[in-house]
Image (cartoon, rainbow, N blue to C red):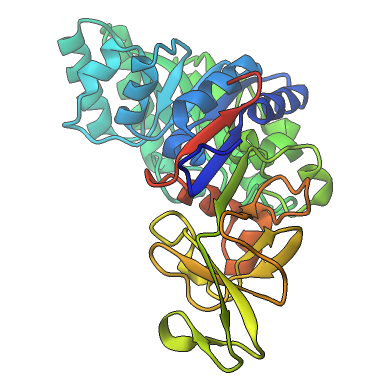
Length: 378
């Protein structure tokens, strides 16, 4: 259903999110963390979190402390892990709010200890080991020192080591040699932690791709992100079929006009009509989430037929050449959705612009495009 005054909308099916989490739970004996960072991958952090929890997730994952505070302010009491923060940020507030913190360095552990003193309670921490992604996490030579320091902080009452974790680099490429190598490195890190007296409550390594393909990596908790929203990290139609995309992006035609053959369209005239044509103006642009790289490639469904963007995507709008087809102001244009009506999917858009489905949905977080929620979970 359209809002009366809306010229564009993102429709989020919360029942799809809930159903996807149930599917993921059925594939593992581990607990499921729903990752809701990036405003729930563009779907809305708090509604997505609630739907995921109703589907059986028992943990929530975010990057920033502000995201964690947003969940707590919304009254969500499930365990929340925040993994991208700096010393100097409100660590004490996070500890007081019962937010779990990733710790990947001695400087972060020092900040956590100071925050625990200020909060008057121990911090819940997850020690992160870099097993080969070469991003966040303690390097292997630094790991024993970090574990020993965390053990001391725990003995002194400033920390409670809840988890030990790491992250895959290539789990979306099943059979890639790094997956087994990272699994072995993680197991070694767990053995070191145990030898130094650390027994975490949860060990977690698997992301969405590993949750779907590598049960031997699940341990006690899996961290599922993109799959929660019905999109697969794997180029596998069988896997895609088990998930339901939750987001539909759509707009209304704002203007139509007839143009002669040979007329250039949009900036730079990179598209020129080949014959007399009707064109439709769609009020969505790169300020709203449409990639500029979708110029002359981005697909859509209009009045039951597929078209592509004609010429360059602008900040606020793009043009569609529909030839001699009938189109009127107010007609619905579906950029992507679950595909039920023959509309493109986020995967189709990712293929068209040379990116991943994660980026397509996450882009549509603009305040100019209202979100509408549907389903019983709403």
